[in-house]
Image (cartoon, rainbow, N blue to C red; front, side, top):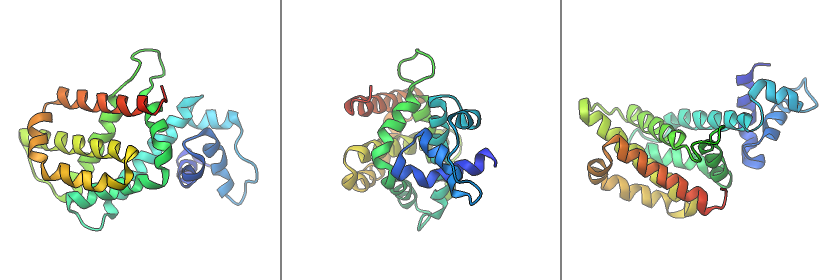
Length: 208
């Protein structure tokens, strides 16, 4: 059985079991030919040693959530980004730990790596622009995507602490997106903003 097939079978189990090696082990039970979960050795061989297997699962879930954005009720940016946020709801309690794990490098330094957060938000912004038919070019292309990435990241972080107001919060940010573009259009400012925000929510949950 291929690794990708097992990852797809594992995704529905995240809601009840979290982003764990156990989920990867139990993925094979969805197949009629298997009655026992995968061994720890098999999980490591297929998905990575230790926490690397969990990172593989988290990234597979994020990739799947981004693909699902195409099913938004309309191509309007507001609807597409809200639809992506809604995909978080069943696993919301597991996301802070998942984000903390992604931000924790395999080596000791740096203590908190903002790059996974930046890539995640940027990919969501790119997909949202593609679905909405955005045609901006040149410097406006970069500013638009940096703006949307910052907006989505802020809304997602807000969702972790106040899920009931996340959509109103997202709408408010989109309504003032021109201000966000002017203040966060530069890549280094965007990186600093997302890095500080992710670090703040992770530390506030006592994960580090």
